Length: 237
Image (cartoon, rainbow, N blue to C red; front, side, top):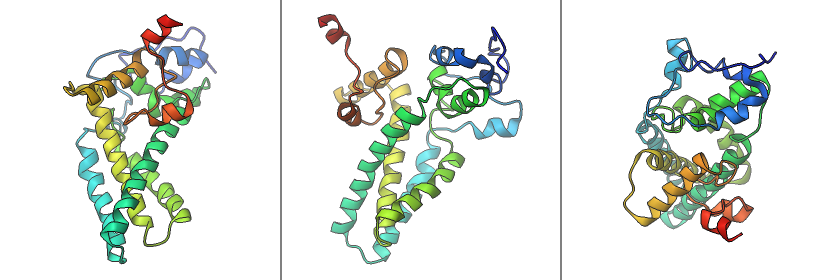
């Protein structure tokens, strides 16, 4: 049951509290608290540890996996001119997966106890505490679990020799995504491209949270009409 008038105690582990918010969860989770240090999630130190990931863990673990996958296709006889387009295609496909997951799964609306709890663990925590530097990239254990269905999905559409390179390209795309995401939150870009990308993403967090789902680019927001309006264009309207 949903507790009426429930208030989350930020000094206690949050994960099993947020479900009690019911329909109020959607509003609560999109009122960000901007601090670099995040809240505690679980009473258990073991489960708490699994939610914490430093940004450099992502490339350290997954770049070798991506390279190993690509080397598998090489060992099966594919040449460099055949490998490079497959890697590029894998990266391109990842940008679509990135957009789709962010828009339709990470921003799914929930109101039940377990729905709110699962959403908070998946993405809600990032909107509530957007500068939490230890919960910004995806935990390796969760990524490892997701690798299996994605590998099998690639196998349905690719040949045995092209599957590893295509999957490796997608893995490279994922690594680029997670590192870019961390960079946009915690770095101070000096170039126009990265400055605009940071502004674009922080706009999603602090101004229009139901638009701007792309992280590494705005391509799919343009394609599917979820490009956020600028303040200037709003004034013109």
